Amino acid sequence: MKTSPQVRRRVLLASPRGWCAGVDRAVQAVEAALQKFGAPVYVRHEIVHNKYVVQTLEKKGAIFVEQTAEVPEGSIVMFSAHGVAPTVHAEAAERKLATIDATCPLVTKVHKEALRYAKEDYDILLIGHEGHEEVVGTSGEAPDHITLVDGPDDVANVEVRDESKVVWLSQTTLSVDETMETVDALKSKFPNLLSPPSDDICYATQNRQNAVKKLAEDAELVIVVGSKNSSNSIRMVEVALDAGAPAAHLVDYASEIDEAWLEGVTTVGLTSGASVPDVLVEGVLEWLAERGYGDVETVKTAAESITFLLPKGLRRNLRIQKGLEKHLG
Image 1: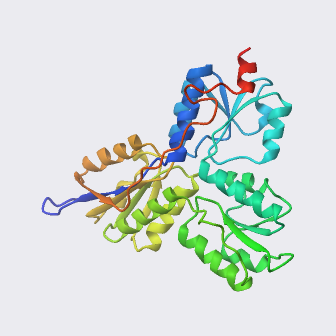
Image 2 (image 1 turned 45 degrees about the horizontal axis):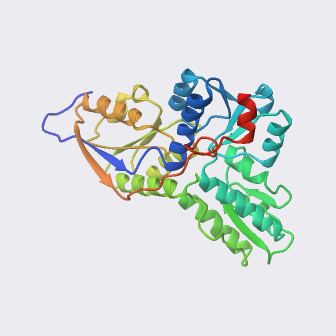
Image 3 (image 1 turned 135 degrees about the vertical axis):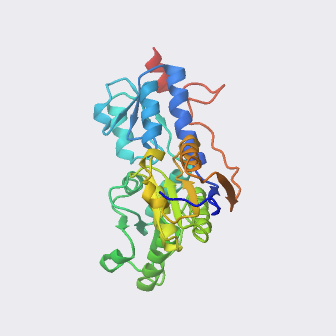
């Protein structure tokens, strides 16, 4: 790549970026369980959607499984940050598994909303992507009352029993703009559609998308660090492009960046998904610095101070859950 020494090359580094409180809690929960109970600790599905995090925890003794049936009877199993349906808890009980629930509290909030509205006999329109773990878990709370709405184009297919008793909920990791577009379409079809007490899009998703929009104002290229199975990371690439960035790409590691992307680029925007540790962002910064992009400016759009307690059974000075006591003999 040809470069000119007179051209100022810079990186706009988004703040906030990377790990959110729910992800931090979930990863700490796996590490705390390994330290407290020893390996192996089984985790149903990836604890968070990030390749590096999963591989790092595997090296420490975590075993990730797709189904509860894969966990040996009497073992410890942890549920991921994305949440699980009640049937999964029942399966774990049948196999006499000691469970640790690392579901993000913001996802738990949506589960509770689903249960409450189902009890009041509402039709619940769940905005989200079919097959996503969070959607599967939320739908399992009230399967007879929940209809999945996978984007605004899906609204035409939605039918309800009583148009006066309809409420929408949402997968927490969606694009804010995409979600509200779907909500607007639903409201046009069902004028009495009720909104949840607070928007289901989590604070971290919204903050990171707002930061990406700010980067897109000045960057010719936006790089989002995150895994391809991370919904919020994928959405950030889409948000960058929709906000006017000429190019945006998703990478797990700096080694995945194509130098051709830098052709003619003076300003690179850099951010990361909510399940990404900052060590991966630092790797990209080093890679860019080696290619002349050593001038880094932080673009701060919000301050985050939210933290969550570890799941019960892992907090200091708390009595271990009965299931874990039995597991330890």
